Length: 410
Image (cartoon, rainbow, N blue to C red; front, side, top):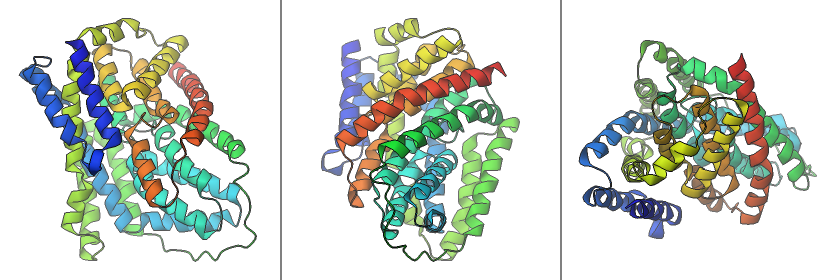
């Protein structure tokens, strides 16, 4: 039966990668989840428990997607693109640093999907406006959508899943992951600086860069929402309530000024994808409750030593590139059980977030980035992505794990 369970997970993931005729991922996830229940791989009570456990996280995801859409509607990403263009001063290296800074902050605060879907087109447009090659800057948003998603519980869906299991507060999680986050970004920047040196050529003429006024209201709401995430943990308030309040506060001026419409906000919530995540949890439960889950439980480390952290991150990275980082997270959390040391769960976050930079199928964000790049005339190259990933992924995982181990000692 474990073979059938694994086959169902594989079928759903292959469909999600290929997306024949542009069909949403839920088209494959729904029949797969039903099959898992009907075949007895997952009991009805197990399915219900899995959905209820994932529901707060998925609701939060929907509100974060709405928040990112509203930020875009109110001009946050146009302002970011303008600021990057002006700070570059004709230098592609300065633009690369600006892109790294913008992508790191966007990923940390608005999640990796905002970086891929909203920042990538802005970055490509800014590079072209400055008559520079968009190539290194586009790949930067792809890599940082993963590498810079380790800082906050709200930066990635995988973080939210792990956050609930760690028992840490929002602030404590961020404090422990701050140094790994900085280390991974600096390693990525150093590699990009050398890897794309032929693309980072100064333009012969400097383009005009007219400043765009800062969207004060949107930036203020985002700042207050981020502060709310930090404070809510002390009062045991679910993050989705904070995201909901932030979304409403930003939706009022956006709707009032005609920058968006109710239907567009609803589309931004991506209800179909949220349903896919819930159904995927049921399908993955069929694997984790069988021999594969037992095997994972046996090979995972039990102590948060440096080698234990490194082994956990390596296993998580490998699993992400085999089954995608979302199901990998669900499988590993089930294998760890309720009593896993928080350090090991944070090492798992490093693995499932940084590991997907190795292959196209490692994370849904990379799949989205490929589509966004193609639409904006900057299609991805499998060779470039793979070689770049082979260089950065081991280095960022090793550096981040070492930084996490140091943070845990403090």
